Image 1: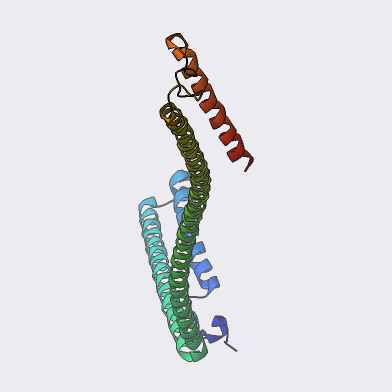
Image 2: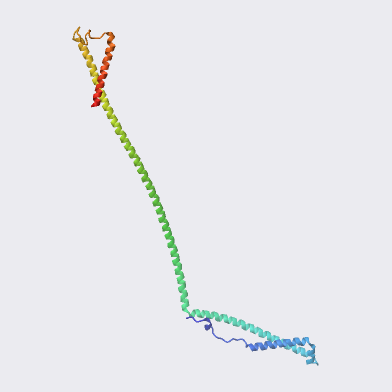
Length: 267
C-alpha cells in the first residue's frame, strides 16, 4: 500500500528564530522609536530628564533609534531570507519526495505501463473495428446493388417473356385464322370445281342434245321426198315459221339443262 507524502517528508527543525526573540526585538525597536517621537514632540520632558544639556541626550537618543532601526531591518531581512530559503527547501523536498515516491512504487509504474498498453490496444481495436465496419458497409452496399440489378433484370426478362407470349398468341390466332381462311378457300375451290364440272357436263349434254336434234332433222329431211317426217317439205314449217321453230328448240334445250342440273343437285 503506498505511503502518504506527509509521512515520507523528512522531519527537520526550522532554522528560524524563536517567536519570543522576534517579538522582543520588535518591541524594543518600536519602543525606542516611540520614545524618540515623544522626546521630539515634548521639550518639557526632555528638559525634565536633562535640564543641563539637551543636545547630547538627543544625540544619544537618535543613535539609539538608528541602531534599533538597523537591527529591525536586519531582523526583517534575515526573516525574509529564511522564509525564502524554507520555501525553496520545501519545494525541493516535495519534488524529491514525489520522485522518491515514484521510484519507491514500481506498482504505480507498472500500472501506468499497463494502462498505456491497454490504451494502445483499444486504439488498435477501434481502428480495426472501423475498418471492418467500413468493409461491411461496402459489402452490404455491393450486395444491395447486385440485388437491385438482379431484380431489374428479372423484371425485364419477365416483361420480355410476357411480350413473347402475347406475340406468340397473336401469331397463333393469325395462323389459325389463316388456316381457317385457307380451309374455307379450299372448300370454295372444291365447290367451284364441282360446280364447274357440273356445268361442263350439262353443257356437253345440252350440246349433244342440240347436236342430236339437228342430226335428226337432217336425217329425216333426206329420208324421202314428200314424206311426213320433220325434214319433209310437208312437215317443215314455212319461212314464216322459222323463228318459232328456233325458239321452240332453244326452250327444249334449256328445259333439258334444267333437268340435268336438278339431277346433279339431287345427287
